Structures are given as structure tokens and as C-alpha cells.
Length: 429
Image 1 (cartoon, rainbow, N blue to C red):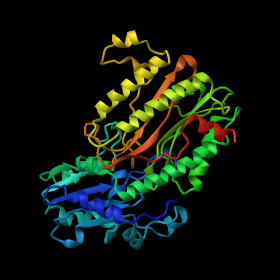
Image 2: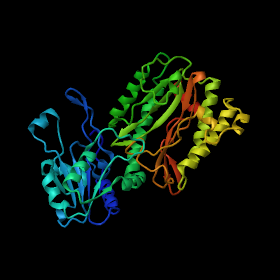
Image 3: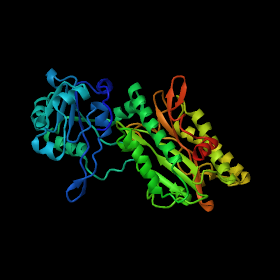
């Protein structure tokens, strides 16, 4: 891992919160992510399962966590299993956790090698009434590949068919949405690194620069500051490319007079930043570009004010839609007479602003949380309105990350240049 060590207190508290919510006499099993084949003899860069990391702090493949707080044998109430290293692995793959390092990282005393898993699990599982299996229940996920937890569930049902099986995801959906102090600080760090990358790009961009050159500058700054890399595939979209919401080709030349939409964020210690800025390639907005930019900025500021404890996501999006509608009328993109006659179920603003304004942020960029639960203290949400005008060849989106506190909200990206004058000032300095 490139990032600095994290206090094991974070993971100890997370485990205590989880086991306090499971049924009596229950055993829960969590797996690290699979290693996915890339081609004949290579795998994709390993990315840890967010739930497993949340509960263990272990950032390594082929690892298993068992939690059984009511286990009659106290040795096995918290157990971590790791892949045992050897000289061959050390030469070809590098360093792996020692048991001592795993104890320090996780706060778990009982650490065993993976080849002991079956024997230890079988020795205790028949004393448990319930078995919690962790599955990916993020509602943006479409299940096509049988990952480790699913494969384990199929095996367990055959071996232990009379146990009662429960879902860990129901508990984790609530827990992970509320960020602790340490999680907020890790997110702040990701935001700080993202800020430095953005300022670096502002000073680098000019007509004739390729989108991929800007992507390289961003990634350079991320890695230079111990980030794992990009939180997601960066969007570096010049001109009309900005109207493709998930444009990631990043292979076109930035032209004089074009706008440049950049959606990127650093991943630090598995926690993510998510930022969008739209800037003029030549360092100066045209009047039309500035009018659209300021309209999006006004919607963003209004939306941020709405992000507070007790607000429902659906109602929030409806209110942001009203702000956006007024701005689109002011830009002559919509007519008030047409808006007055619109179908409320299909509002006209969605022609120019077709995505949601906010999503939860954390260990996943689109973090695991309920879209039907009110915003709560401890949530971190993005705020990302946009206006996309294919017929004019550009789009504008702006995005910051917002923490809800008991006293209101805090913009974790408040110090990242956002006002048009500030953008122009840096680009022309």
C-alpha cells in the first residue's frame, strides 16, 4: 500500500458496531475480493472488497474474516485468515502481511493462515444458529460473476443446510453511510490531493494539449502524494465530449475556444474524492460559456444548502430540479409556457440535466447506502449539477463533496477553485 498506516481503532469500532446488530448466537463471514484475470497470465490490479476493508483494515487478497461474538471458544470470536507467504511468493510478488503486521493493522489478535480456515470454521459453526453472508447489494450493481461470498454461500448451504442464513449487507448499508472521524479525515486527504492535481492542470492546460496528457498530469500528482491512483476512470472531456456523461476515451485534442469538463478524484487508503470542474481551454470564458457556468454554479450553491440532516433524496432532487428549471429558462433553453404545461413525471429540465444531483461517497465512489433513507449526520454526499447542450457543443458540470454535521454541512472541497474569476486568474497567472 502506498498510503500511510491507519489507526486500527477505526476497524475495531466498525466490528463492534456490526456485531452489536446481528442476532444472538450468529457467525458472520467476510471475504477479500477475487483476483480477476486480465489476460493469459496476468490479473487486474487488486482492489479490496470495501466491506472487508471496513471491518478489518486488511488490504490484501485471499483473506477471510470470521466474527462470532457468542462463540463458546473465546479464541474464535474474531478471527482473521491470511494467505501464508513463502520465499517463492516473496520473490515474485513481494511482501505480504506477517501475522504481527495484520494484528497491528486490524486490531484482531487471532490471526491464522488460510489453510487453517476449514478446520477452525467447522469446529465452531455447528454451535451457531445463524450464519451471516456478505453479498453485494449496492443497487447500482448488476450481478453476473459469482464472487467469493456467493461461492462460499453455495458451499455452506450444501455442508450446513439446516442453519439459518442472514444478510450482512442490511446492516452494513446503515453503518457505512455514517462516516466516523477517521473516515472523514481520510476523505479530506483524498480531497486535498485532488485539489493539488486540479491546480496543476489549471497551470498546464492550453490549446493543443491532448486530453490524455491532462489525465497523465492528474495521475502523476495522485501517485506523488501516496494516493492509490484514480478513484474511478477520469473523465477529461473537451468540447462536445462533455455531453457524454461517462466519456473516458480521453484521446482528443483540446481546442482554442472549447470548454473542458474534468471529472476525477483521488483514492487514498481506499477512501475516495469525487470532483468535477469545467474550465475554458484558453483560459477565458466566452459570454455564453460564462452564463451557463454561472447558472450551474448557482444551482450547485442552492443544492448544497439543501443537503442537511432529515432530507429525503427524492424530495431533494425534485427541489434541485426546480432551481435548474429556472436557470434553463433564463438561458433560453426552456420556455416558461412549456414548463407550465409539462408532465410532472417527465420534467423538461431533464433534457439538459439528465442525471441525479447527489450520491453517497466513501469506500465506494457511489457508496453503499439507502436512497430511501433520509440524509443523516455523518453522511458524505456529492453535489454535481450540470447543463449539457449538444447543439452548442459543450457541457458544464461542477461537483464538490459535502459532509453533513449536526450544525449543518461542511464542503470538503471549499478550498478548491470554483468561481469563474478564480479559475481564469490561475490559468492566466
